[in-house]
Image (tube, rainbow, N blue to C red; front, side, top):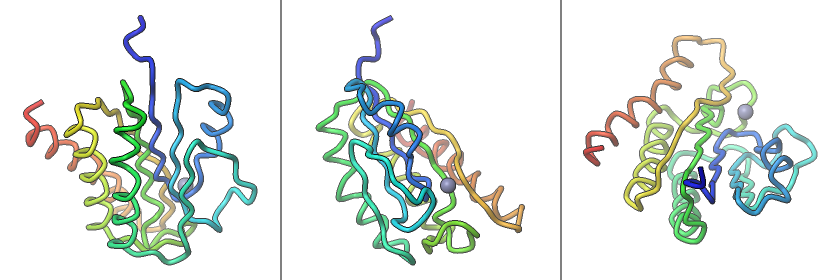
Length: 160
Ligand SMILES: [Zn+2]
């Protein structure tokens, strides 16, 4: 009891994290961060503690640079006892509902970027896979596996 006083939710699913934004809107112990495509569902966006809306068609480097612009400062400002990370793979270029243009490599780099930013700062992080809408099931499964591959690599890298 009482071990976790502050939680940071990092929601990188391509759709805004509107559910957590509403649920925790009056809860100062949970900071909600959503980086999503500006024109996707939901049409009416809720207010996260920090929303970063991305333009249609954004590719790997710009996306990762945008994430890097916010994430380190966010971690050091919020100082969460626990980070919950929603690693939706629907920002991928092949995604039917996504509207962004990340590659598999870009998604893997994203997962490493999130995990190493958290671990380098000593912040425990729990991850969940998120959205992904693609007829190519093998490609989709592979994309979801990137989170696990990155977590294994980070686990070894930080000798956890
Ligand atoms: Zn989604």
